[in-house]
Amino acid sequence: MKLLEKYKSAALQLKNRVVMAPMTRCRADNAGNTATDLIAEYYAQRSSGGLLISEGTFINDLAHGYIHVPCIYTAEQVDAWKKVTHAVHEKGGKIFAQLWHVGRVSHPDLLNGQLPLAPSAINPHFTAYTKNGFAETLTPREMTREDIQQTVSDFQKAAVNAIEAGFDGVELHAANGYLFHQFFAKCSNLRKDNYGGAIENRIRFLFEVLDAITEKMDAAKIGVRLAPALDQTFGITRDDEADELYDRLVNQLNDYQLAYLHLSGFSRASVADPMKLVIDTAKHFRTIYKGTLMINKGFTADSGNRVIAEGIADLVSFGELYIGNPDLVERFAAGAALNRNHSETYYTPGAMGFTDYPTL
Ligand SMILES: Cc1cc2nc3c(=O)[nH]c(=O)nc-3n(C[C@H](O)[C@H](O)[C@H](O)COP(=O)(O)O)c2cc1C
Image 1: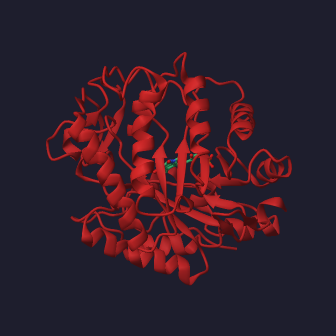
Image 2: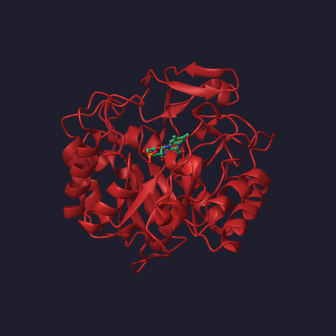
């Protein structure tokens, strides 16, 4: 089984090629938004995966877009993550922290009454998950140059915090319509300064963050997640320069010896054959990107083995299958049946639907 083979690059050594995709689970229902013992148990249960990527973790007070997310900017939060990384390492696993700023996909109820930040003051017309349930987004505040500098520096600090907390690396969440993606897309970025307009300007913020983090750590500890095919969801409409922008961006990532590039498979709801688009997208970026390529969305053991055998990707990340199957690797190895997920408990507090799925 290709998925169960070891993976080795200059940056990464993994016991297999099955990666747990980042998934928000909203279990940090405490005042300080700190990771809990239950969260440590959840990740430890899944540590037979070659690499676990944590749920998105917010890098500062204005990054929030969901409730009960364990964050990574206060000393208390950093300390709390140590029990998670320790529990995963104890069981021989590896874990990266996904660093997250939602930008405009938020609501004042999540930001102590403040308006969300974004490249431009344009409402994504999407929803944010607040303590009162899903709330309509509103028009965000356009980031000033100082806001951008502060956010770059908060990403840098969060990455340093993640390493201090014992994570093996960090993944920048530059996919799915959140802050980085809002800089990339024309629909969300109308800036007239050197963060808007030309493609090199719209990708600048991501590279400023990468440069800031690599001042503090080796690029081998950094992964980047992109959603190049995403369209008409998360507030983003794909534009006539998206192909060129992603080609250029991914090409520029070759200047860094990153841990990996992770392609999120989100496209648009009306695509006739979503898996074909995932594969075609991966094949395209495989020709541009020289490093480790991880792909995602809708994969099974069979299709995952196939993309690795065909050389389309090095690693495959699994999202929903990992929610219901803590022992996904063992199940793949045994050809065993998979548990059925209970989607109503994806974001609810407590152990139910979180740590209580049976293993073989
Ligand atoms: C409950 C849930 C939460 C998610 N949270 C995140 C997240 O925090 N960050 C992220 O990049 N993607 C997130 N995703 C997307 C997954 O990483 C993945 O791309 C998606 O589930 C598709 O992969 P799959 O078909 O293997 O499930 C989430 C998905 C689910 C189901």
